[in-house]
Length: 283
Image (tube, rainbow, N blue to C red; front, top):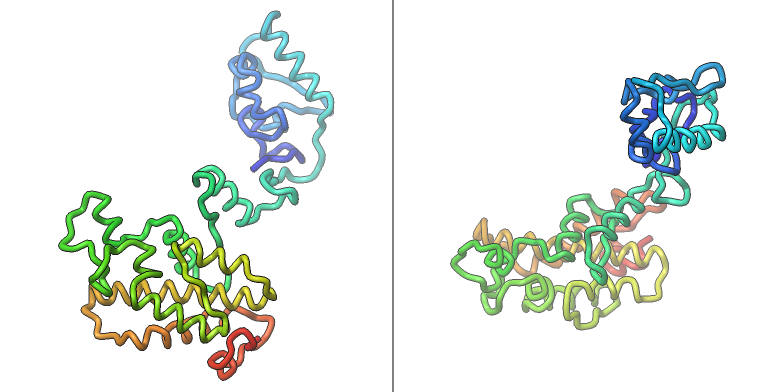
């Protein structure tokens, strides 16, 4: 974020980043040390068309004189006006803040190169977007991840099939139950999914397929609903000793994805009967 000069009544002269040269307490440290009021506003240093100062003592020659000359040269090209000071977002060409540009900065600074970037689908609840983000970063508390954090648990086998180690790729893709669910979802979409080797492949498959915008929205909502329902089924098995039938997993995906999309997609009405038969043709 950058402060932009208007009337100077809301910008700290020395400490705010309001000029392309950066905060002036860093650029002109000798002058900053001489200033009697370090938090003074720009308007405090501008009076009747001229820049004025309140030094502890007058700047001397040498470095102090050089810094004052450089500062006055910059100020000679600046003037205040009657408009309020305002903020701009320097990370986007439009200078306006967007969640997308902020997310891009976070990705670039926190994710190692090559990792899948964060995604945000506005047609599902925020908690599911956050869940999917954690899934792609392998930050879900699967049994393998719990053990790798140094926590002792009775078993590291899959909570659903009890046959293989429970990591994200097994739980969401290779477990017999998950594999059958993806097959059912693909048949329902009339878009059979390929064999995924890791969870990243799910989203890469979404992006690589030639399709209309609406088709991509529908598929992404259904994919997010699928991984969400699988995770909740797994948790119910562990914590609630759930008797929830595996056959109901697919039904939950159909209902949840319809509810998510129909309540958030405002451009057209989604027909429930068509959703059951052919979701890609439902809107």
